[in-house]
Amino acid sequence: MKMTFRWFGSKDDSVTLEQIRQIPGSPGVVGTLPDIPAGELWPKERIAALKKEIHDAGLEIEVIESVNIHDSIKTGEPERDRCIDNYIATIKTLSEYGIKVICYNFMPVFDWTRTNLYKPLGDGSTALSYEQDEVNKINPENIAETIAKGAKGYSLPGWEPSRMGRLKELFAAYKNITEEALAANLKYFLQAVIPVCEKYDVKMAIHPDDPPWGIFGLPRIVKNAADIERLLALVDSPYNGLTLCSGCFGANPQNDIPAMIRRFGKRIHFAHVRNVKVHSPGNFNEVSHLSSDGSLDLYEIMKAYYDTGFTGYMRPDHGRMIWGEEGRPGYGLYDRALGIAYLNGLWEAIVKANRR
Ligand code: CS2
Ligand code: MN
Image 1 (tube, helix red, strand yellow):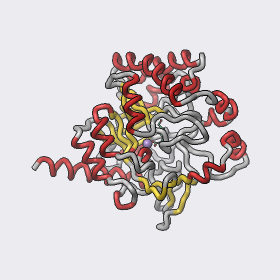
Image 2 (cartoon, rainbow, N blue to C red):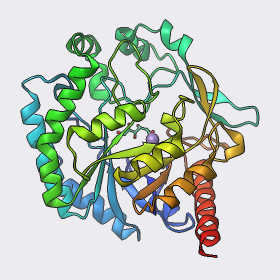
Image 3 (cartoon, rainbow, N blue to C red):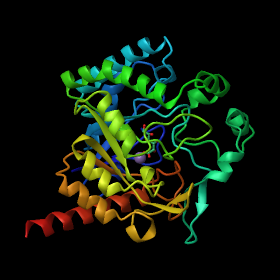
């Protein structure tokens, strides 16, 4: 297991590389180029500069999260071939700079969605939360206007800015896209990129849909074990793999995370480990990583990774805002650093207990 920490780059992150360097174990960095719109080529100089900056700080980068997928690839429009060519060229360049895993998602229009970014948890901390009733009240096509009016809560750090001004157009494009059609379009994409990944030794790791159920009437195809089974079969290569996000799948209590890790172990290249507190179907909030704070058993999750011989990359995922920190919701320093220390502690104990 190789521990990592997500970083959005010096312009877009409140956390510095110097701070990451001081987290126990000096985790690897999971990087990105957040300003490059989906579908465009990642310039070599930008990748080189990102790697150099991270190296100069005494850290490694072997994982990218994310190289985003253009909507034409998801809807199967003709523009997809140009976008796929750019994706392939980007994979090749990333491999030249030592990147081993690319995390991506295949969610139509919206990346992860929450209804409150600052839910008070009662101890002075805040965390991201989701209430289905609140989502049901939103007219998604008006989200851009809601954001423009300054309404708090619906502009999410995960949402790609380049898509927010085009919501009406995007909803129209997805109107006739069923889950089957979306899966067929994912297959078309994977059939084009996976042979390149095999040649250049870069693994693709799809992130689940967050939350793991359909929202705003849009199709979603990475919600549970049955979906994973289908997507791994689309192209049956170890390079077509998963980011297993425990807190994301865990928002649906029917997803048994340790069982999913044991079942799909060999195809998991990137582990996002975090906890979540599920209150009732469709309603949850994020919590600290500690098992007793949420609905998931993090010991059982780490044990499942150990038992399957997991050698991939792992990171803590969204953290709470604690100790007065201000920053990107879900991506502050303190709670994620506590998360790493906890996950490393569980891992050390499991490794040593199994040596005896
Ligand atoms: C989220 C996502 O759970 C998570 O890690 O923060 O934004 C995730 O990074 C993307 O969906 C991956 O493409
Ligand atoms: Mn995640």
